Structure formats: structure tokens, C-alpha cells
Amino acid sequence: MATYVNNLRLKEIATGDESGTWGTSTNTNLELIADALGTGTEAITTNADTHTTTVADGSADAGRAFFLQYTGTLDSTCTVTIAPNTINRVQLIENATSGSQNIIIKQGSGTTVTIAPGKVSAVQLDGAGSGAGVLDAFTDLQLTDSLTLLGPVLTIGDAAAEDTKIVFDGNAQDYYIGLDDSADDLVIGLGSTLGTTPAISIDENQFVTMPKKVTASTSANISQVAITSSSNAVAWDSRAAANAYHVTTENTTFSAPSNATEGAIISVEIAQGGTARTIAWNTVFEFAASTAPTITAVANKTDILAFRYNGSVWQEIGRVQNLAQT
Image (spheres, rainbow, N blue to C red):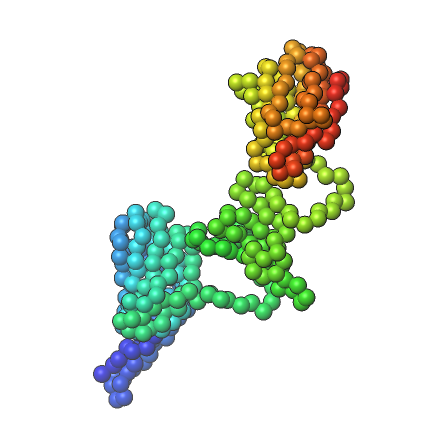
């Protein structure tokens, strides 16, 4: 009696069987081997939550193909079971379904592989029977030479709550670029462990922190940011608007700057409009002799003031007044 207990479910003729017809079975086997080296497409029933692909005994089917594409329309994640659960092989599987849903590839009660819509995964079916699992064949993939990416996008991570990084393994020193997921910071640093000796950190507000000395070969430019007055008060974010300017529209008071950091330096250009306005200051601003200056009360004139935060108050470190605007 013929059997099919192999990874491609080919017909294995018993000794002495099929006298005079074995050539037909052999040719069929050769055709199925060729199919297994090619591509196949299998449709999942619309909106199905489960689907089974069975590699048939000794006859053609899409599930035998090395590159297997699943199509159909889904409204939820679909679990695809590949049978029999004794098949041990590697396949490339594409989730070509519509509906923006994942498919989960399984074989038995073991591990599974999730494939996002529009993506392809290389999977290993371990063929262990009822407890069979599916593994991602490219887990811990190692390349011994260069890798060229022809597409415009390289995605690292799967939206899970975990850190991701690229490590540059040098002869004398390592460097990394990574996402600190808990802090939502992009970090460039020394070493191979994310968070170790950071050199540059960028947070979700695009604020940049560089804990060490920065050397610029040309002049450094801090973009000027407008700050406005509302209800006779000016809100000043010292981190977002370190180089600020304010065009007067009403008599106003500069409130205590937010995001104050010890050692920070900020400056503001106060430009009078067509009508001169008065300017007052929160008590966190400290001036010479603890006396706030009188801002030039002349239309179309400008005063510029600079402050440094000592951890308690913003101390004035510079002042130029009564400047022409043109």
C-alpha cells in the first residue's frame, strides 16, 4: 500500500505495487515537487476567523507551494492552520488579504507567527504533531556581508511596548541608535546597551538633549519664536522659545517661564507696535538692584533682554534698549 508520510505528501509506492503504472505516479510526484518550488494562492472565506490549509496526499494544491499567498476579505484576525501537523518545512507566506487584518499561522498547539496585512514572513513548520509550532525562520538572522535595501522604508519594531535599536559593532568602540520606548525618546549613544552613555536624546516634542560639550564649526542658530499676550499676560516656554520675540498688542506682564532648567539662557526682543504698551515682570525675573527696567514706551522701538536661570530665579545677564526697528 502506498503511503504519504513525507513533508511534501508525495506518493511512496510500496515494493511490488503498481506494476506497469508506477511511471504515472512517479511523474505526478515530480510535478508536485515542481509545484513545491513555485507559488500558490489560496482564498480565505470572507470574514472567516479560522481557515485550514491541507496539503493533499499525492495531488496538486496551493498549500504545497514554497511561496504561499493568502487572499480574501477579513474583518478580524484569522487563524490559519496548516495541515497535516507532521509536515516539517520552510515556507514564505504572504498576507494579501484585504480589510487590514492580521493572519496567524499555526500547525498544532505550539508557537504561532502573526503576519500583518501586506507583509511576507518566512516560517518554519516544525511538524511535531499535535503540539507542532510555527517559528519565524528569520529570527536572529545573521548576514556575513552587506545588505542592500532597495525600498524607501525600513521599519524596526512591531508597535509592541519594547525598546528597539541598531548597534554599530566597532573594533574599539560600539555605538547605538535606538528608541527608548518607555520614555518615547530617540537616543544615540556610546556602547551597545540602549540608555548607556547617551550622546543625543530627542523626545516626542522634538526637544533635543546633549549632555556633553557641543562643538560647532560655524555659528549656531537658535530659531526665533514669537510669544504673544493674552488677557494681559505673556506665557513663555523657556525650552520651546529660548530665543523669543514679542510684538506688543496690550499692556501685559511676562509670566514665570515654563520648563525652566538650571543654567538655561533665554532672551526676548520686545518690539513696540504703532501704540506703545507697558511691560511688567513676574517676580521670578531678577534684575540689577532687584529693580525691573522701564521698557521703552515709544512706538516702533525695540528692547532686548537676556536671562539665565540659577535654579531659583531668572537673573538678567544682558539688556539693550531703545533700538530702532528699521
